[in-house]
Length: 632
Picture 1 (cartoon, one colour):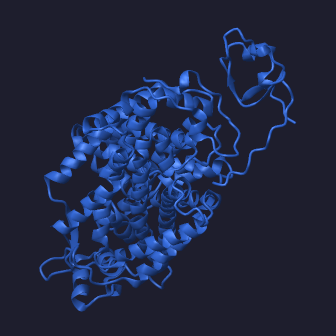
Picture 2: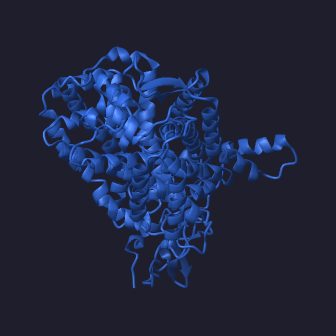
Picture 3: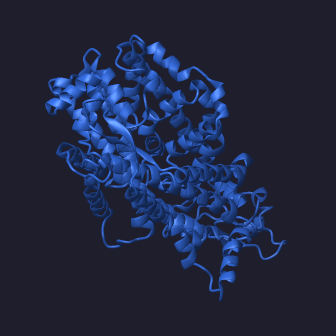
């Protein structure tokens, strides 16, 4: 037996036009809800009875074990390899500490509002990315399908970076680090002479032994079987972490999301005690405010915020759908965003203290270090190999990278699989574990091409085309869906029902105006840059007799550009397809276009229960007046 003391007393009922969760039966108010037939009816005259409440049925979708698991999973998803090897480089490149100005501005006006939006949508609609957007409007189903496509693309190539980390990790247990001396680099006599002439054994080892790089994109000669084994291992570990959904990944994040911070702290104290560390840190933080006058600084800051928070992939939506309905989503978004950005800043001190030590040894100049995999696999490897007990520091560093990568990988995998299995119900008679296993095996087989000599170049194409323009379009579509179709006031009421308070008006303005504007600017600039000049990539040229350089900038071949734009089309084409498939039955194109415009401008009425209530789950919202519709 249960009581409803919150509804006892005249004050609780006197101003309600709805009786949420209750239905008059005799003299009692029972489970359900009804609208008062006239204004004179006095709900407080009804007797409140003690009733039996049917216990909530078990959620077949699964759920996080507790709030800590959810937050750790979101932090692990957001904090990835880019926090370690991209943000510090951008900070150094764009004015040191001055870069924090555009970075924090973009965090406030773009990062936190969009994370808040995605978490709120997932938590309210209780579905993966496909169903969430189709509940707002059937035409928006393509947003969710596009998120699934992008997540699959990211899962396909991101894991190969983890495999390389595993390869370096295992090589750290050998008798001597293989990239320390040129004599230990596998290759013919010419290659050894080249390595000695360049005095850059780590760089040559990375291109010649790890990547087994070919001469260009269209040359797929060579194959690294060791890397293939590491790729299989990475997929096996990823599958083990997620095969039970959030129930298993929720337990894995206790280690995968926390231990990287242990490694980071240890490396920080080791780094700052090395000679030359101060010089490296000064390069990282010394402000140059004149750089803020260039547009590229602001573009890079906005792009870094957007991608480092894993926005637009659908993973945050999927994660939030497993959270209890009554949960402070605004606080969660703030915590994850601030932890992610704080990690980026802290990682910069670790990286540049080690790079300062590298410069102190005369191995390389801090000012010439680039971002990306070259920073971790070349520059840091060189510095680590010169430390005392280099094997320990190498193991610690690559353990950190492996865990950072795995967290992001299986979070993105969950974001791709949840809509397929739960939302779209493509395999109704097959257990999720089997679907996930087959899904992982297929992606592994497709990813074996990245272990070939041209694998590095294919990754560059996927990263340049598949992750930039599609994600921006998807995020912009999400803002339009919430800000202009669903309505910011509707979203605010939904959030109020979930966390007890409405979001600050600042967030509603961002969702409808500021964030879409920033996304449009970033998209236009990115698109124009891609169209104005032919993309270049670093092709491995080996070592000629008159040069000690291993890589030369080369124009990306037309075939690679075609593949890149094909990836873009595949990721965003679901949006117009579902708009067309769900069009109203107008007799001509003019009426069809009007129906699309009306879906944005007309006042839509939403039945709260039909949007998120699952079968067997009691109604838990408070109901809303006036059909739950509004325009800001």
